[in-house]
Image (cartoon, rainbow, N blue to C red; front, side):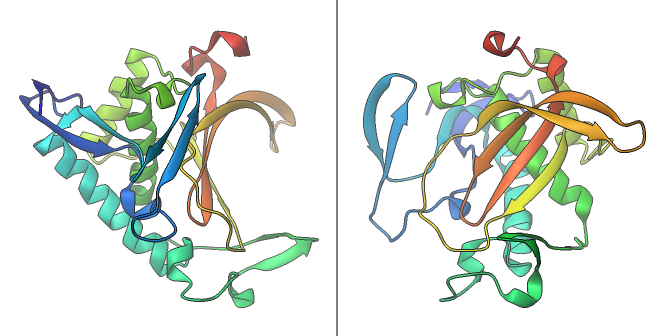
Amino acid sequence: MALGKCLLTGANGTFVKSHLIPQALSAPVFPGAYFVSAGNRVRPTRSFTSWYDPKIVTRKGEDVLADLDSYAITVLRMHKLVWSSWGEAPCLEPSLHRIFSGAKGYRRVSFENQDKIRLFFLSLLWRWAVSTLPVAAEINLSLAQQHQLRDMILASDSGDPMLFSVELVQLSTIGERQNMSPITSVKIIEDLDSNIKKQCLFIDSTLTGWSYILVCPLKLFRRPDLF
C-alpha cells in the first residue's frame, strides 16, 4: 500500500483500504456474487465488494471509522433497520411501523446513543467528500466543511443537529441489492415555525433496507450544475 498523510488524523503512515459505506451494509445477494458498477460515462465493471478508497486513512484513522461502523451496524440491526436483521421475513414486522397513507408510514425509534449514530452518518459524508474516486464526484464539500466534519469525528462531537441534519427512510419490503453511490439533488424544506421554505441540497444513498439523507444548505456545496 502507498504511504501518505491520513486525511482524518493528519498522521503520516501507510494507507489502508477504507470502505466508503461499511461492507456489512452493502454485501452482494450471496457470497461470490458481484455488483455491476456503471455511470459517470465510464465502461461498466464488475465489483465483488462495495466502494472503498485506498488513499484516505492510515490504520489509526481507519480504527476510528471502524469503531463508528461497528457500533452503528449493531444498533441498526437491533432496531431492524437493515434487511439482514429480518431473518426470512419479506417485509418489516407490522407492529414496528404505522401505515397512514397507502404504502407510506412511520416508525418511532429511540437510540441509546443518538450522538454516536449521528457521528456514523457524518463520517459517511466525510468519507465520500474527501474521496477522489469517480463515484464520489457528486459529493463536493468545501475544504473548510471537510475539516469541520473531520474535527467533529475525532472529538466525538456530533455538533448541532441542524447542521447536516440526518433523515432515515426505511424500506419496509425486501428489494434488490445494489452498489449505488450517493446522489445529490435539491429539496425544498419548510420551516414549520416560520413557514419559510428553504432550498437545501440532500444526499441520498439507498442501502440494504434503508436510505440515509443528509440535508445541507446549498452554500456548503460546490456543484455548478445546481446553481
